[in-house]
Image (cartoon, rainbow, N blue to C red; front, side, top):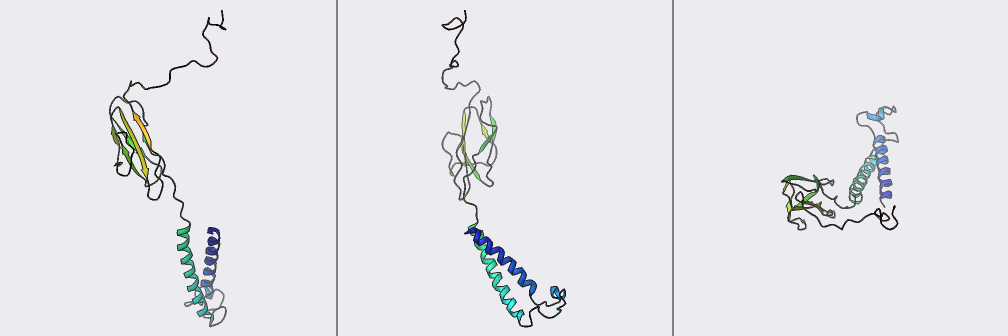
Length: 183
């Protein structure tokens, strides 16, 4: 459908250019080039026909132009995930975190209490002061698009322990003097 509209639009543009160039010149114009001076290339009555044809082609041109803007809009997408600068890492004192989103004109909302950010949360308008132990969450919104995934950053205090799986030795390695080891 869009391809057909594009072809019709291009043909209308070409026809409009041709009809305008073939019209009777009022002050010489392009008609003088062919030596016609004050006559139309197709006789004296064709001026009226070309005028009405020009009006019709302009109406078709404008209709197609308006229709193309409605049909050829990019589909609504998903807003890019916000980025924290600096990224989440252990901190020993308060820092300022900048939140950035690659989607132009997206609005960023954030929370520092661990809750999910919504349009009712704090709106980002500059660096956010983060103290050790804060979990920063942000989400970006753009009208008509799906909101971004939530970006989570845990700014733990330096030296804070985290829960992790117990350390294991790589498979296949054995300690010396154990069964199957060297003597």
